[in-house]
Length: 388
Image 1 (cartoon, one colour):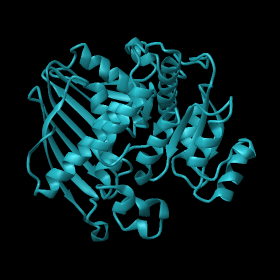
Image 2 (image 1 turned 60 degrees about the horizontal axis):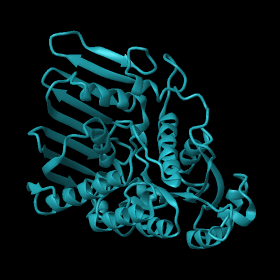
Image 3 (image 1 turned 90 degrees about the horizontal axis):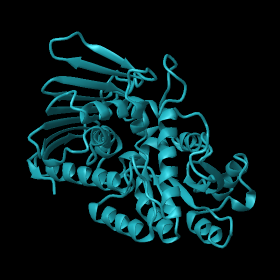
């Protein structure tokens, strides 16, 4: 159970690029990073408007002289300080992730980056090589993976409770963009601009989340080939899709499907993952994240609740408040930021990190590779293509 005791010897001196006052995601980064005293926010380039960014940073209790006009200046000036930053979180539009991540690694900084890490597998592999050569950590904020019941599902599958895995059924399909809301909302508008968002919209923005959940639960499964069809139901979004269906064949013969959509009218969030084995199935839905459905063939369906003693110790290790009390996305992100901190501390001390998984550079590479392959399949007319 997490109770606030220190996980690392000293808080990591941390900064942000982006995540300013109008950011959709900046606050959850800060809340997650600061909650367990794993990080200390000491600097930032919070906004594309330097004055607005400085005003915001000062109101976050960051020293005025450490509120920088841009990330290049921040990396340069912080590098001159004995108490300079050790890590940076990147919460900017997709098209900037690659260059900021590369600059941070070259400045000797650990990185926590919003997905996608970049636009091409070639770029992702370049960042992986650079991080490895500098002994630096890259974390990707697949925040839903920090929910306690994801670890419970991982343990149940690993211990054979489902039997042989046959089907993985995934979706992230909400309805909030069933109309052209981007015409009135700047924070949504860039997501449908290929120059900023990259080669996809919902495949990269939504689909990679349940894809990573499947990688956590089923680390032994590898995609052999896939087929994808994508559509732009709101025509102004073309060539980017607002709906897509992906089918995947795994190397053990199992089969997966993933529905990515922002036009599922009436759906609040619609992220689910169901893993079907030869003996039993499990299902997790992010609108009810504290529960995991467990269905054994021939027996009544069961609902497992977070924080209960019948869960595996690995799942209870992520518990923050005990059974019966609801935990949410902020706790899940905090769990991931704790894992990021442990990985960074181990890398900084030359030690090894054992028994701790987190969405790292390999998750970033696979997310980019999956989107790239989905787009390639769809643009060829929804054909089966080899994954590697």
